Amino acid sequence: MTNSTLNIQLQNQTSSNTVYAYITGIDASNGSFVLIPADGHSTYYPQSPSTVGSPLAVDCGIRLGTPGSSTPATIPRMAGGRIWFCINDTLTFLLNPGPGLVEPSVSNQSDPNYSKTWGFCEFTFNDLQLFANITYVDFVSLPIQLSLTNTSNAVQTVLGIPSGGLETVCSGLNAQNAVDNAGWNQLIVNSSNGQPLRALSPNTGHVMNNNLFAGYYDSYVNQVWSQYTSTNLNIDTQAQWGVVSGTVQNGLLTFPGVGTFAKPSAADIFSCSTGPFSAAAWPPANVAQMGNLTARIAAALNRSTLATNANQPDGESVGVYYQQPVTNHYSRIVHAASAWGKGYAFPYDDVGPSGVDGVAGTVSDGDPSVFTVTVGDP
Image 1 (cartoon, rainbow, N blue to C red):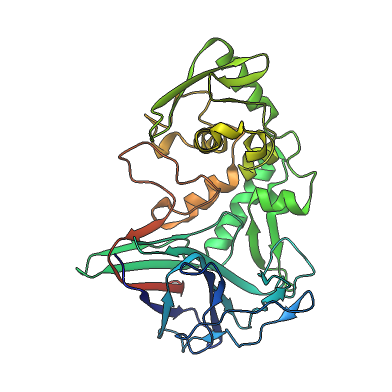
Image 2: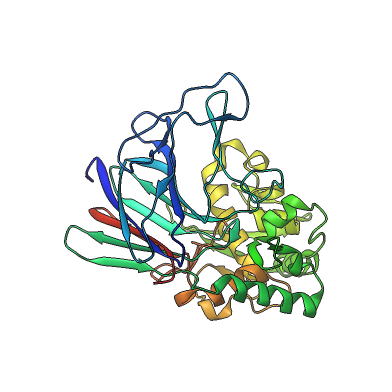
């Protein structure tokens, strides 16, 4: 069992003397929202306010030291945790009745943080382990690196995008748009000085513009549906259900005794959670198994490997991902820009063949000692 608290080191490897960190999540012991105040060690449990958009009652901006320094913090066991960083400014978190924590948003142009330079990583710290990942599921902005040391001094590291990685991603999006004119360049958000502020994922881009990528995946999905009308698609659930086989019947990808999938749209594929991939679309008795199938089908569609490999996700290597003209080029470009090719670029980017090192950019350990999160490029 893990200790009840965990030591964190927040490293400033930017060129800025003004960097703030914020730590948010759900207290694993009581299910309440919890934030770490500015001292980096105490806890703040917001109370339900009387009005929407109320300010926090406590300063939760942990000011980091000068470039090259490390600032300590302590967290309790937390679920759905995030460590946020903001360069040259502070972030604004608000409260709604409930309480509900209103986090910074990159898809709401009226959000007070929209034009600021910020990013985050994600973690869960419970009685079994610390699990953390760098994430590009919503957007790319700041370089953030993770290092986890356990009590035996074994170290795991994920480097993520380096300094200049955002510019590399934006250049790649522009280049891809010059090839297919699908709208990849519309994922780039520039600051007031015309420099890249962030690159949105296609899912976030679609949230801001419902017409973006409309019909983009149709030809590939039609190819997949045609292929599996006469051929079995075999999904290794990598769980208690073993290998499950299905074919297209009456226009639905059908797994007998489990459930069916209608053709997904590009928005469904990028989100991995709408249309046929929505839990509301699944037979209630098979939610867990259908969710498992969704993860593997959605991952193969994002990587455009479903038409060429009937045994998912087995037998694949990173080299076969994103090789088709119609694919999640944002994910392709982000992985190419990241050190070691690792980073969570869509919701099921952790899916992969059993026994193969994944590409999602995670660290985990059941006996963590120090979790170091670095903003900037060391």
